[in-house]
Length: 489
Image: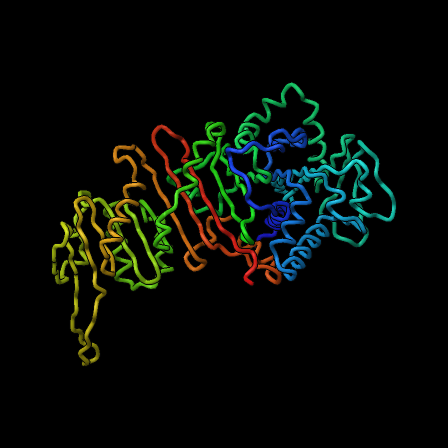
């Protein structure tokens, strides 16, 4: 594992711990605790690699954990939290976190090219009667307000090297002294604060009812966004919202840039798209399958079927709906765009057709005899079925019933939308169950499991993504929703 990820992973999981809160609000409700108005924002320096902001109340964190998780899992989460705090160099002693923390938190990370580890800056508010000594629990008292203090623990690990307490009771601590100085310098430019944070404020204004928001411009592990067809720019970043539903973590991700920062509400209807949930398809992909061929490896079908699907995709390029459940698969597309007679792999197959309710049903079959080492063997090819309706072709490895034809037809036209819409990129993916879901689009998941493998095992239960772009947009609209299971028990 790349050790440079260790800091980000540790901080990220700390974010998750602070994010223990049930989904109980929506974009339409007014929140009493507006995250865009937090005073902690004035201390944020620019050019951060990642940023996490939270105003979740500590009492909600504690109550949710006690209510939702078994005792064994509660103990495991507590152990992870204590391990992370120990790694950071925070020692609460006999104090409890909820007695110190005052419901405002910001965590940022920065590239450090000179070291193997990323740098981090952590800012949080403490209650009026608390100070640095309550956080570090050192033998000698070091708390002095408005003074940069170096943290030293003899023979102990402390990733955080410097700490500062402001007069308004914010703790600013970091692995790099310069980051604290930059944070303090931020508040001295009052005239430029609005200009400096305008895009961040605009985004936060659209999520006033959210309490945990994570920003990142790391797209290296996201297969859908790290793509040569739509190269991303420096100002592009992901806004991630996460909550717990039951005991699963729900992560919602939105691609934002300076041109779309004030238009986040345009995502409101996109994130409600459900792809054929009634039929419980494990894999559903709409549009070009070329960069989705990896998902075919998770389906128990033979090489002929995989080659058959790829041949259709190579000829059509777009506007295909691919569905799969267990060993069954189904391809749907506009029949006017492509004739199945052009498929070379079916050239020597037998063909038999029958009509019913204005639909034409066709089966393609092939059995041949082969000679291997003077032994005659029968080779059976998987049957291919075609159903032709007025507008669509349905191709599959199993016979389709008419009820599914109506359901899937409606789904296809809903996904396609206006046939005259000039989307040169319009892709939708839904992957269910761990076997069909990949970690490729969720940053650091494998590394998180590596670090905490003896305690938890985070797995993807469902992954949804919508990515679309039209002329003259310079960046695609991207929304993803990931359902993560933390404990297997």
